[in-house]
Image (tube, rainbow, N blue to C red; front, side, top):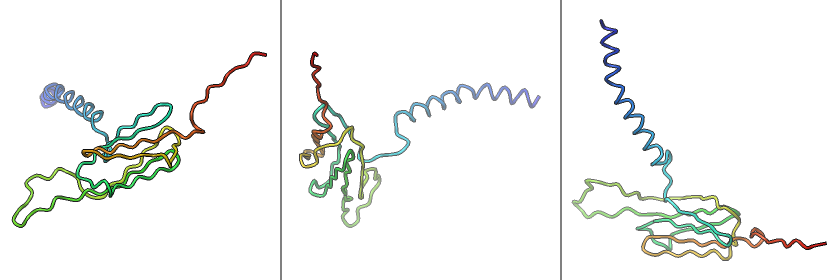
Length: 143
C-alpha cells in the first residue's frame, strides 16, 4: 500500500520535475554562470577591433585602459550614491566599487593608435590591427 502511494506521488511530481529541468536549462543559457562586469561587445574586421561597454555613473577620467599583445584590460570605479541624513535604501540593485575586466582580442593591435571615446555612459574603444598581423594578398606569378 505504501509503495503504491509513493509511486502515485512520483507520477504526480513528474510534470513539476520536467518544468524545473526546463527552467534550469533556460536560465543556465540566458545568464552566465559567472557574472562578468561590465558586459562588453567585441567585433572586428580586417583592419580593427572594437570594444563597447556600458558604464553609466563612471567618471571617464577614472577609466584605465591597458592593451598588451592580444589583451585589453579595463579598470574603473563607480562610487555609491551618497544618501542624505535620515535617508536609507529600500532597494539597492546597482553595483558600485572597483571593477576590472580583461578581454582577449582576436589579434595584436597598434597600441599607439588605440582610441577611446565615452558618451552617454557608453565606452567605445577602437583598436587598429597591427600591420604585421593584417592579411596579405599574395600574387602568384606564372613561370
